[in-house]
Every structure is written in structure tokens, then in C-alpha cells.
Image (cartoon, rainbow over all chains, first blue to last red; front, side):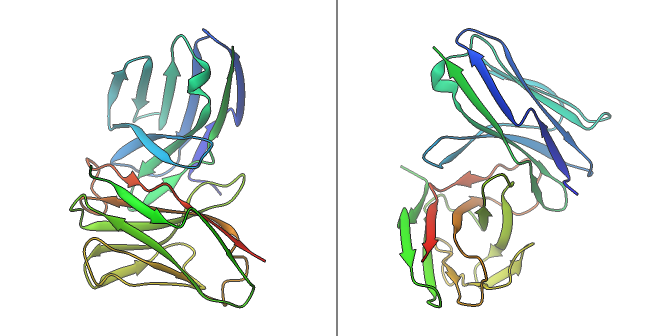
Length: 106
Length: 115
């Protein structure tokens, strides 16, 4: 049983498309992270949020605590956005989703 | 520059040998973590440490050991008891453990292959 479920697992988009990645979780949380993992393996934290919405450049993250759901949106996608996006929630410990592999084609 | 370093990036070992993975941070964080990542699976917590000289088992601690003698350092030893050690290992740190307002910073990872 996975405490964090992401969809889709794999996503291919044309450059410029609007992209949405979803995350649902089943545990009580105090915050949720969206992480980006590049092909070399390094992980970068994109957002940490506990309510509402956050925006950074072309990235937008939203969370609905009542529905236990979060989305990561990428506007005007670019090939450099190609990476694995991981949803992680903080309850009594960290729980990680298996990631969404995004490929943006020029 | 503040950050987390892991070395080496790639590591090869023969079956039956113990191997130690290095993790160093200069972020002045109290909490440090070791995760294992396998293809198609999410990150899984091996061990974490909230403070110097203290550490706790995570979900998959069997076959691993850690030490936390200094705030900056949290080395992970993969012992010969670990049945399937080939994986990508990630070290992370945060100001405190279990704080919702805190984020984790990740190192670049070490890819261990046991031959």
C-alpha cells in the first residue's frame, strides 16, 4: 500500500504545452513537497506547501487538504523541464511517491 | 556555497564486502537522512538522525548501519548482510526532523553496484 500515489507515471509533451501532475495521499500531513530529480540523480526541492497555492516562474503547485490532493502545473513547457517529479508528504515521517517521468519534446 | 556532498558518485564492490558511503553537509542542519531509491519505487528511508550521537531506524534499516559523531557528517555502511545492496543512495538534511515547515536538501547521490 502506497501512502502517496502519483499520476501519470510517465508523460510526454510537446514544447509549449501545459502540464499537470497529480498527487494523492492517504495519511495526515503537515506539509507536502514537490521535488524534481534530473537524469543525473540529484534532487531539488521545488515547493513546500501546506495550503492553497504557490507559484515560481512557470511552475504552480496547489494543494487541497480536505481532498488530500495536490497538483503540479508547468506552463509553457520546455525540454529542460524533462525530469522526474516526485511528490513527498510529511506526516509522522516522510512518504514519497514513485515519481512522474516527464519528457518534453522540442 | 552551502550544501550536501556525497562521495563517491559511483561505487563498485564485490559481494560480501562492507562499504561506507560518505555524506557531509555544511548547512548547519541538525537532522540528516539516508534514502534508497530503486527503479520504479519511491524513496525509502533507511536511517535518520535528529542530532549528534543519535539516530533512528527507518523503514528498511536491516543490513545497514550509520554513525553521527559530528553534526556535519552522517556516513552509511552497507554491510554484507544487506541482501540486495545495488541501488541509488541519497543523503538529505533539514533543520529539524518532522517539522512541517521545513524542507529537505538532497545530496547528488551515490550509485552503488555490487558485483
